[in-house]
Length: 150
Image 1 (tube, helix red, strand yellow):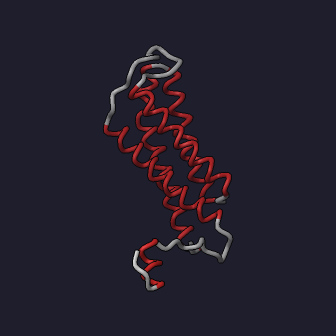
Image 2 (cartoon, rainbow, N blue to C red):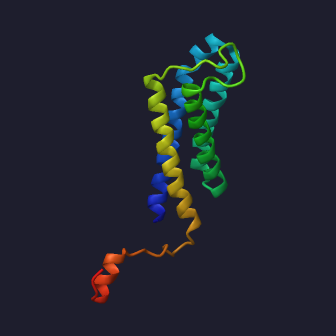
């Protein structure tokens, strides 16, 4: 991947993380109204996603990319859990299944896109500078190249 493409993907990842943070800030007041613990959770997640965007723009590293990928994946898994099994462990609504709202869908799509972009950046980090991963040819193409039929 070229440096320009990696730079653009880094900016995209930071932008997606900020959008996810804004979604969590948006719903934070209603969660504080339900219980202070739910509101605090959304505050922490929103601040972490906003801070992550800034850190990513400052210096991209494999460790930071992994942290963002796993952190956002954990948020998606917890969201899916609360929409299917129920709110885990704490608070007055523990065990209750939450409804799915439009802002939920937006934030989860944004976080899934963020995970995909981070995975692309991680793949680039794993490939040594100036080299490309070997390209796989399909069996049919190899047989055509060698003059034999598949």
